[in-house]
Amino acid sequence: MVRDNKQDRRARVKKKKSSSFFRKLIIYTLLISAILAYLFWLWNRIYFTAHRFYSITFLQNDQIKRILDGEKIRFHPKDKVKIIHISTNVPFNYHVRLFCKDIDIESLLYRGKRLISILPSKDIFRLYDRIVHVRFEDQDIGKIRILIKPSFEDWLAKYNEINELNKKRDFLDIGLSLFPEKEEELIGLRLSLAKEYEENRKIEDAIKEYLAILNYAEKLKKDTLFSVYESLIRLFIKTKKYKAALRYCQFAIDAGDKNPEIYYNIYRLYNKLGKKEKAAYYLSELLKLKPKDVESRIELAKTLLETGDIDRADRYVSEALSIDPNNIDALILKAKILDKKGNKKALIQVYKKILSIQPENEVILYNLAALEYEIKDMDSALKHIRAYIVKRPNDKDAHELLFQIYRAKKMDDMAYKEAKILIELSPRLTYPYYFLFNYLWPKGRCKEILPYMIKGIRYNPRDITLRKYIVLCYLLQGKDALAIRQIRIILKLKPNDVGTMLQLARLMEKRGDYLDALKIYKKILKIAPDNEEAQDGYLRLKFKTIEEKEKEVE
Image 1 (spheres, rainbow, N blue to C red):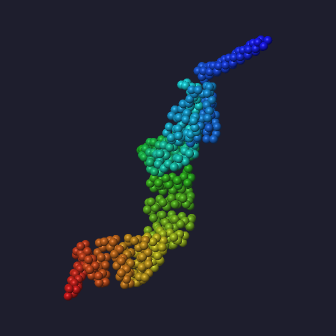
Image 2: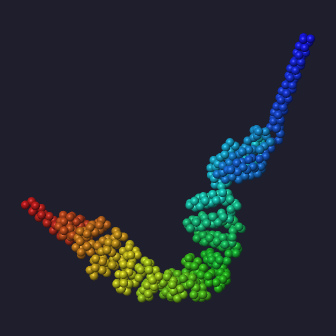
Image 3: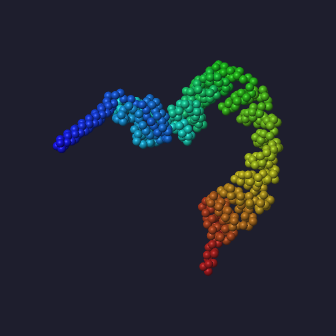
């Protein structure tokens, strides 16, 4: 029985081992089958299934943005961007890659970067409009569109930093391509640029800019459109392109511009081209436009005056005054015309008319005084310039005129007071010092002269006349050393001034400096060998120095 039990136990163990083995075999077989099935599925999905792209997820600065197949995303060149996920039906995105012309887009898969670092030209002020292709091996399975461009504010700040006009124009062209939605503002900038070209006398460049603005004529406000037409007309006339000017005059009229200057320009242009009948027609149209409008006539007269047509300007301003005799603008314009014509008597009457309407008009007061001085009506000039100085006590020009009036009327005491005022107001003026010296010197008032002359050379250190006046004062006061110092400065400024050199030689001889005096006389004789005083002085001092040497020997 014991043997039978052992045999039974061995049979059961053997049966258990056999059963465990089969179970393991089944498990391994199933596991391997599952792995093979999965690998087959992967292989089938990778190589035999239609591949699809769903989306790309970007981390743009601190924001996550998911862009679907066919959509677009906009970036700023300075944005920090990273691609954090590509969604496709390809397992593990195996063999999936990104392609973008000129831009290393795949570098964004590994770490976030500033987009400017991967742009081809590293220029932020450009539009980079690119397609990012999502490819499986060499097959496109989807795409998105990326737009990389700066903000309008960044572009505008850069534009305002540019000073060179041609560079400004090129950058403006970039702005128009970058920001079509900002067209109105960019047209305004182009208009300003055209005006800058015009101010800098770059006429051809200004014309090109104005013509470029007309490409947007339908979008311009009427006033802006008229201004562009008028600028082109003016510039074409300036460059003697009369037919082009006429063409744009007609464009302006067709657009509804009723500016009288347009009609006058057409009249003038047809006159230049010898078409008198057409010229007469447009002149009549101009006069019909506003027959009783004073302001229009004044504006037309101003335009005519600027172009040098004084007679026609006079005609229109006279028409304006016939309608409104007290119109200040017309009277002032009439004064300008009379001034250009040189009709001083009529101009004085116009000035008086203006003063009767505007007694406080300082400009007219001054101009009237100056004109009366010119025609030698000194009493009237004195009256009006005094009235002006009450209003403008520190006006240097007015005090100069008052000084000249006092001189003309031989009112030297008053001229003396004005000279002192002028020295205070404008110490660099020299003629008040000259007058002051000539007024005080005959009176022996040297003490009063010196402080003014010293002030004069402080502001006019190279003025020889003022220094000579100082020398005379020092000599009169017996201050020879100070006089000699000034004389030496004069000779530095004017080395060959014979009169001053003789003066210095006499002073040196007077002081007993015979050798210095002798050298000066000798120098004078080299410059002016026929000068008798220098000859006599030289011989006299020569003998004197010889005698002194003989005495020293004895």
